Amino acid sequence: MTTAIILTFILGYIAITLEHTIKINKAASALFTGVLCWTIYILGQPDKALVSHQLMEQLGEISGILFFLLGAMTIVELIDAHDGFEVITDRIKTKNTVKLLWIIAIITFFLSSLLDNLTTTIVIVSMLRKIIADREQRLMFAGITIIAANAGGAWSPLGDVTTTMLWIGGQITALNIILQLFIPSIFCLIVPLLLVSPKMKGTFESPKVVENKTSTSTIFERNFVFVLGVSILIFVPIFKTITHLPPFMAILFGLSIMWIITEMIHSGKDTEDKGMLTVVYALRKIDTPSILFFLGILVSISALQATGQLNLLAEWLTTTIANDTIIIMAIGLLSAVLDNVPLVAAVQGMYSLEQYPPDHFFWEFIAYATGTGGSALVIGSAAGVAAMGLEKIEFFWYLKKITWLALIGYFAGALIYILQYNLTH
Image (cartoon, rainbow, N blue to C red; front, top):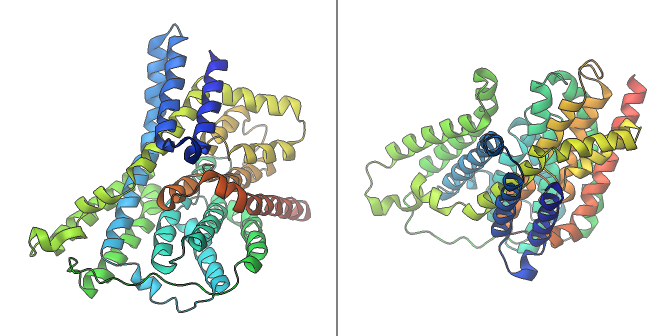
């Protein structure tokens, strides 16, 4: 049974990567793989109630991620509908490609630590559409954005879900993880930037501005909706910290507030004048296939987790490789193939706080590795999946153009962390 599940997952993964060759949408392949994995599991398990319970338990965690993604994408679309991103894009005067690349990367790095890597990627990639006309240039920027978002999320307890898990679990403390991973995370981004900058010479062209006659958004409405939307996104980690509710509750709460306020702002207009300025329109415009793709991937991986395959993999690494550093580096790279959330959950279950106390080298390095290792593949992180959906990034394009940069950055940051740890301890 477990062999059949693993084989199904591998074949499904291959189908996803060959989306444009086999001409089957990756969302369809992911959904088919996820359902088939669980079907094989329940048919091979005598206790059907147990499998159903496990599925519903896994679906609870998965739906939280999906609702968060849905809410964040809707808020970003609503800001975009009001031309809110012009507040930022109008202030970017440079036409130098390299200079813009560094500006975007640095903004993404710090914004990701404040919001999270997923939300930040959605915001930045949406902005890039307003700044860069050439798709090939924009794809390179999107690739660097993924690296920057994951690097920025790794050093903040709120920036990446795995770092948050370790923080909530008591394996790390907030101030210490910031102090220990800030410099390694910077190197994880700076090294790829230095390598790619010589290849990004010249200037870029911005998209031609087309006057939208159906939009009746005023300058006040544009600025107000932008500030409101960004404030709601920033409020997400604050809401989570205060209430201890999952992030998706915060984003849905923020979306409801934004929905009410925008309805009030446009209440005096007729239905035709409101046009695309409503949340209803934004909900129609968001990339639903990407959300279904994300669902399929997470359901597939949850089947591996429910059958204990991820725990067996972690145990195999421990018994086969005696060196903690190599194990952690391997887990980090593995998170580019398997979701880093169940991997970290498996690690948390395998190693106790008695064995590795809070703020131990093991936990700090795990936070870095699983936070940044996913950049190696476009479907290896939430940020990558979001960018893939928004810009239709091909798996093999990313593998050819971005993976080597992400890997060099990953190993550079890891080396800096090890050197830093040995010097300070």
